Length: 561
Image (cartoon, rainbow, N blue to C red):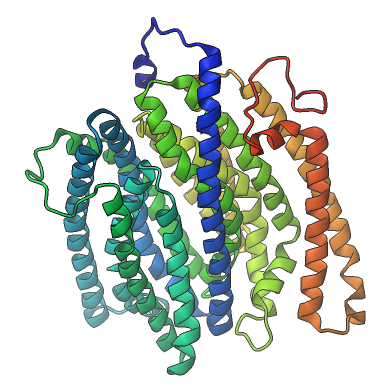
């Protein structure tokens, strides 16, 4: 364990001083996570709005499915070269340089990385657009492929801009500047919505024309997202000038060496995501669109609780590692687990129970292309995605631990196995599940593999950081589960009871759907809060910024705090 060897064996840490210091650090983590979570929540809400508009204009049509598949390609670049492998490699090295050599040298390193990435991405994008053009002219694409490629040609350059945006966000997050990076996805959704309501209704109503307008809007959003990063970067001392020499920097080599294993793993994972989209398009022309409607609802709580925590934790963990402060890392991780699961668990249970009513309320509007059949298709996918929210969120907490320790190989090794498992499960479920449910099998495979991956990563993390305090965390999680199950039962009973009086409601079906779902969710939240107050008061202490000490005599029950 290279990380453990960085500690001085003669070091003795005062528990009181560590607790005092980490109380302040963990409070800062929660505040930063709240900022990121709030803006991420806004982005997710706008994402739901844009998806409602996409459903109204395109439904689960072939053209919407083609857009979903084409958009996965630049997102693959983003995950690989932007916020994925390269950011995971850059942030720990950047934090180390920032801590030891100052902001000027750290920003020189970031500039070198960005220049190198820009050149590589421009080359890949040019080759990709050329291959698409040659295939359209000289190949024999089928109807579904012919719908994907023109959209891919438009959106491929978006991959260049969004990767640079992600690297800018990594630099800003490492300097504890979370506002602009967290607002960047909000801007994408605002531009997307502007295209859907300000351009699409005024052009040719043919869906293939309108969906291309959306693709051009995505490309424009990438340019604008990059432009708004510059003032914030300038505020932390970043300079766009060409650093010389470009290549002869040992720190740059270190970033690339760390990136290599992560790129292999994430590349395989993202390729698997792309294959999932292709398999969904093969299952049915509407399947990728149906999965995207369900995915977006899952991303709403996941972005708020999982992504926001993961965004804040990688810089925090990296700084802990740079100071060889293992107890601080362990305490921050324990707090993050409690807070994330406390919010993600009821979202997971609630969306599992209310999959169809939620889909119907959000997307099925009178006159929209998203009809009752689209609701059933998307709800079946959501039913299998929703149980994975906690697992997806936990994986966003485990991975930063390894990246901060400069050990990307371990999660990648596990991830590659999960990629293979996911692909096998995809094929198995496509073959064995009945027609109309095969796309839901793809969602089920994703959830199952995420759960297995989370367990494997947790075992390794606990071996490295130590088990102190995690017994308390485990008891907290078990009691949260009890509170969540009670909430799920109440939601099911209330929701079922409110279905029958719908014919007596004088203000229309949509108003009744909103009323009944609001009452159902309100009842569930009330029950969950009351149950968690009785069963898990330590989490409420964490939310108020008071760290729970890992004493073996404590529990998270009524007498435990």
